[in-house]
Image 1 (cartoon, each protein chain N blue to C red):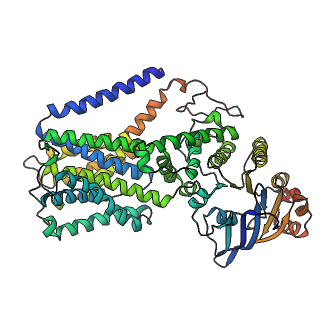
Image 2: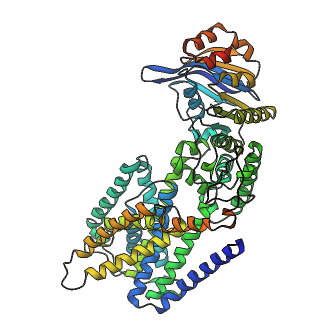
Image 3: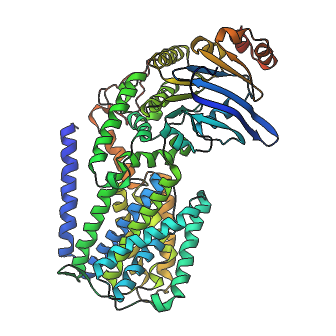
Length: 351
Length: 265
């Protein structure tokens, strides 16, 4: 395949995805638009989590908590008559600030201890929400959240939210892509591989971890903020621990540390979970079935992905894509010992 | 020894592990532009001293000064920003990144732009990325890896991986380069290349400390050599001086392999 053909394939793929993203809300039914918005929200959260898992090498099982912090921040402010746009803007800030504050002690932990501490944070947060009903509505929830207004624009229909969420998702993806392809992005990748090597190169590893944790929480926060205006009502039930697990599964399915993997993982897992829910809620089936079914299926997906394509969907596809590069079959630079130092999937421009 | 202004001044440095003093009141100074060898038999404390200077270990007591500034409590990243670059004995590469990207990580030390500037592609991001890339390309050319720029770092053979570590160090525009056993595991030809490269960097005025097991390698390139044994400095001088130092000979004969004692004589 020639270089020109390859780039035109990439370009047309991007155009097709872009156009269908724009056109879809117009043709979808209202319940499908809801799924569409859900995928967009998950994409935003998962982009941040992927940045945390793939670049700083940290796993958070409390990402739904930051999603919840964003949702409650925006919801409470909107109910108290703050301008809705200000409330939405406050969502990522609140989530980021909380992540920064708890990140200082939490990020001193490593591996499993860190994972469980983020899980514990979410459980604590849920208890706090249930016990501060004067502010949050407690277990009953917070209702009467007005529609979002951006200047003269009222964002009220599902379609409106579909566009809003994708504008934000694209912005988040672009920011993340820019970040990963720069000095701080290289530093994050380097420290995920070897922290002592990274610190020797002048990278302040601890502070970078904290920034990454904060940014990923802010992404979850803005998604939560959009969610609360879209649904108009929130209760602690909307932020279960299983949601945090779902976000991690999405990262793994899409491919840890790949920016576009966030979207693929979010879409695949959201659709699967919707199918399972509709299956489980058909009459004559026990009410617990969706939860049990989805947990079982997630476990299965996780095992299959990790066994067969540990790089995730996007990671695996991009590896396959690289193999089609024109010079892959030609001989590359040769080591002084005479053996080719290039693997089959690798090419060098001057080869 | 005090007639020059030392770039690095090590004073009474102590580091214990349990009851054992791996480094025990070690003092020495390295002048600007010097290529200093640091040798000693196994367990002499070379690696501990190396990590004390790089910042990956902290001393129990004693001081370290770099350009007259105390650094013994600074973390490794802060020392790197001051101009101290290191290459590890066990190669620390950033696998999954290309040779060029690995080298560019070295540019972190002298650039400033952070997350917001990178996220929104602000002017300083563009300016600094260009400078880092130029410096990295130049550093790769210096070590002879420019042909392999776009390859994954882990695909290089060991000798070239070591060169890549040096390229990354050069990309950080160091004022002091610490090399921990760079010749270990190299083939004869790779060793000659390394020798030539270090010689070239030395003539350009880069200050280096070469921690090396291979005494022959060090004595052939270093101007001055500091000899450690059981945590103490037992000798310091030109390669000729230390080769005939009775303390050094005893230290090496006590534990040496035939290779090393051959190098010493």
